[in-house]
Length: 238
Image (cartoon, rainbow, N blue to C red; front, side):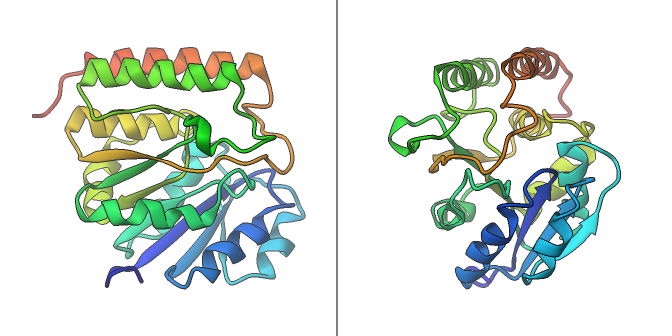
């Protein structure tokens, strides 16, 4: 628990068999996590044996896509007061959750940011193309929705309160790679309180199915811009 609140961690996995056990163990060693749920999204066959050697609980989500995996993870952790989402590909340091958690006393969504140069470690896949692309879309979002300071739209390390999830869940639609950004846009549109905090960004174990390909990355970026514009001009219930 963290300050009397139960804390669950959701780890979606597709191609992280080589790093997932270390990620689970690192979260568990912090001594504050009540439950770790691994969402197996048609993952590499070596994933299940790796998870079985840890304290995590594995569930299968057959609908392919990052969004489908995270939405399933949210369902599996419905009793937790706080839910952390993190990718188990070694790009994030689980200990950085200790940076995010204190802000949950004031806001419902605490987002990580990977674009602050100080925290981008040598070998991390955050060159100028990715860094400035994420920053540009973040600034577009910030301007169009009049949000707090934003510097990254692609960071998947975040903590959400139960109140925040209750408000956002009915809005979720995407099953794909843009789900994390969709969550940010829903929060901005509905005025769910949020803040963004720099986290360390490390070299990945294995190759990403998205950011490992510049063409796919560009297409995802363009789809995010379109998503931003559609949400901006969508009628808000408030």
